Length: 71
Image 1 (cartoon, rainbow, N blue to C red):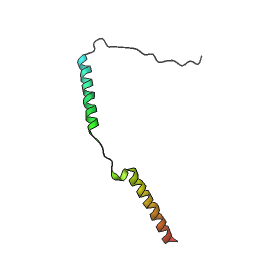
Image 2: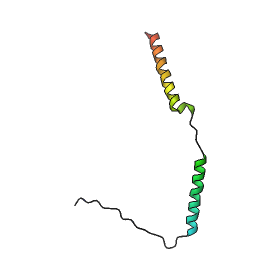
Image 3: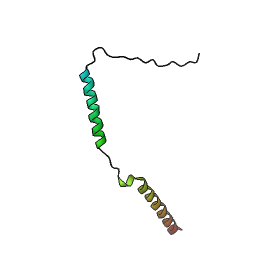
Image 4: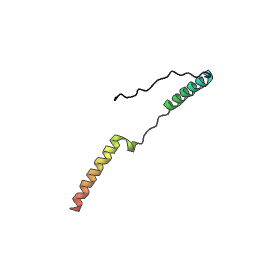
């Protein structure tokens, strides 16, 4: 009564599949993975975690000092 339907799997192969299309597709994927791996993006020094922590601490110290001047 409460059984879930299972997905059916089919092993379908097209009748007129061109092997050249498949070969060019794998060649494109290989070239894409090669190009994607060679480019490294360097983040800004201001967005690194240690720099953000130092900026946060500096802000707290500045707020403490300015609070002393107000009182």
